[in-house]
Length: 182
Image 1 (cartoon, rainbow, N blue to C red):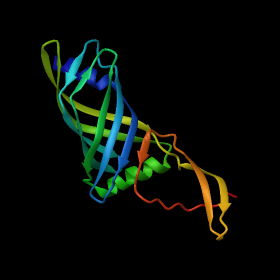
Image 2 (cartoon, rainbow, N blue to C red; image 1 turned 60 degrees about the horizontal axis):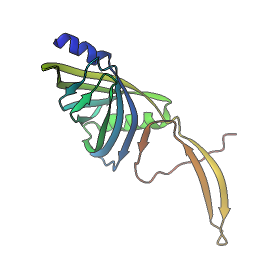
Image 3 (cartoon, rainbow, N blue to C red; image 1 turned 45 degrees about the horizontal axis):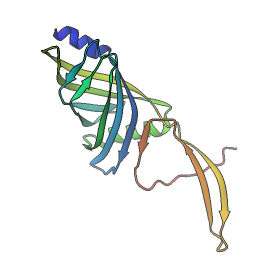
Image 4 (spheres, helix red, strand yellow; image 1 turned 180 degrees about the vertical axis):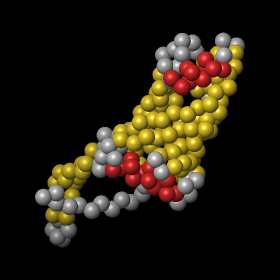
């Protein structure tokens, strides 16, 4: 039974539809996320809570605690509300954020999960590891919509920032250098 259950977990798909990173400090950040899980097998099952390592291409930057997950043959949605993540490698976290903001795609590696799946009065221990392809912000593309000049001689720019990614990052005040592309 363990081998069959592990094969179902390995062949399941995980799509992250929303990640929100807020209140980032040198040692931690708050993360909220919503995921869709599909191909979870023909019957309903329950996966016990587990802790996953989160890594980008530069290494592991933190761990995420997943709640108990109940699936059906149609899959399920997983919601994690505002969880504090302790940063275990600052360089890896900075590299992951840089990739989110500048690359068109990136991979989030979720590894080292250990859980038990219960279905039909049976239990199976599984190991969870999944590579999740994410759409990055590609820049993000910023367009200046208008400039207004006040009587005091100061000006205000109204800008539009396009984010094609499911990732939302609040890293505090952001200073942006504008250059003429010509």
